[in-house]
Image 1 (cartoon, rainbow, N blue to C red):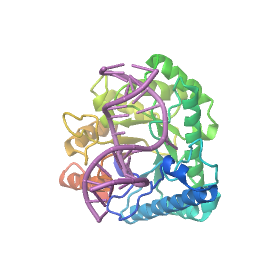
Image 2 (cartoon, rainbow, N blue to C red; image 1 turned 180 degrees about the vertical axis):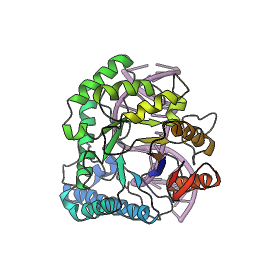
Image 3 (tube, rainbow, N blue to C red; image 1 turned 90 degrees about the vertical axis):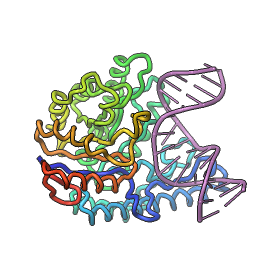
Length: 320
DNA sequence: TCGTGTCAAGATCTT
DNA sequence: AAGATCTTGACACGA
């Protein structure tokens, strides 16, 4: 069973390399005229794309194939009062360069629109804004040459609102109204408070889309502690996909802050899960969601090296 | 240049 | 009905 590790958004040891530089709306508003506003948006976007490119080159040199893009490449991208501008054709060159790095190195690139993007909300304005955000992510992925079968967007189900059951139905209804290209990108994740693995599986099976299980969220929010039965079902949601299954992992920060992410991934937390995964015995990828980002990945690999049950393939890949 | 309050966005709990 | 909290990296601003 071969497993690859990946990380989120930024490499913390790369100096001055944030791919999420931004401007607050308050400050944007204060800028003298549209020309200056546009200039500012352009400069930040260019920098973020360049830094994303640097990170991908870093990943290449460290043999890291799994990476999640930041959602903040284009500042204020979907803000209603910000001038509409073309953040794609302005930078064809750099998008193409990014695309080439991804293709040549066979990288798996995803994105995770943040918690404001909720298609199950009973509020129409929230759903509308969410669709706008999905379109933005889709534009970025297309610009980077990532097809719907490669560039996936991870979403959560949403809040509880009236009831979980009604919300699930609303999710399904609204999902079906989305453009096909976007529907094909969406994969669903269990959350740490409301929608557990069983809830998410119910929806992904109905919509025939993949599920990503977050082990930390599962630990915070579950009916059955045991993953044995569920993991195979979760991995099976990927059967008609080009990509192999993916899971998210992080470990609780402390006893008091169970839901917060720790700096690194606790090896025992990871190992407990891996024993479950071994029973399914299928190749998959792991997204590490720890404060120390890429360094947490390297730290975990160090622990893995010390354990005789694993065989190291390279900096980010191992067999069990 | 360093530290700290604030920031586009939602939802939920408290008051 | 309004405010605090969750969570996050980076801005904004003052010392």
